[in-house]
Length: 181
Image (cartoon, rainbow, N blue to C red; front, top):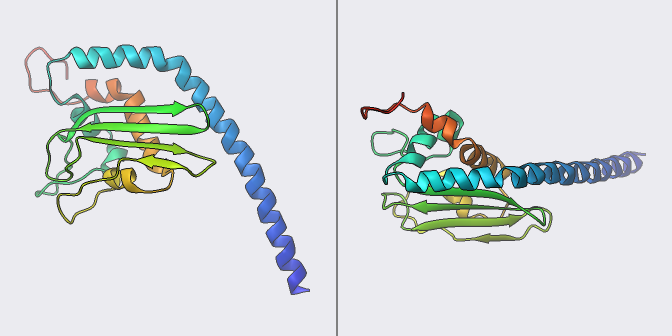
């Protein structure tokens, strides 16, 4: 009797997992379609950012996205550190894949100049740059680039920051004259 119950439960769970995988594929396809539609706008925005005087655009953006604080490194004073980010690019890709690339300024956390991860969600294949750690402290945003899993939670945070960076940038506090707070 108990074996039949376990067998039933296993079958139900397999069916739930099949249904979820179908949902996840449709969800990804919808997100990919939207991402393709906004790619020209993102490219235009990225060109404008690149034309700015070198500064801390991405640092300001990350500093304003409160959810992002959960994955970001903290400096010696336990303050969130964002100055290590030179640039960020996040893409949904055909083939149920995503890619994240961060160009990194010199910093106290990692020795990489570029962090990159490409993950194929349903095949489980991951291409990653790995991390050259400078110390013993570990931070989720960097660990993301050395794991063999998709890490969708971190991807979602980075995607939100990437796509909506202008909103976070424009609401950041500026001390420079002539810049809107």
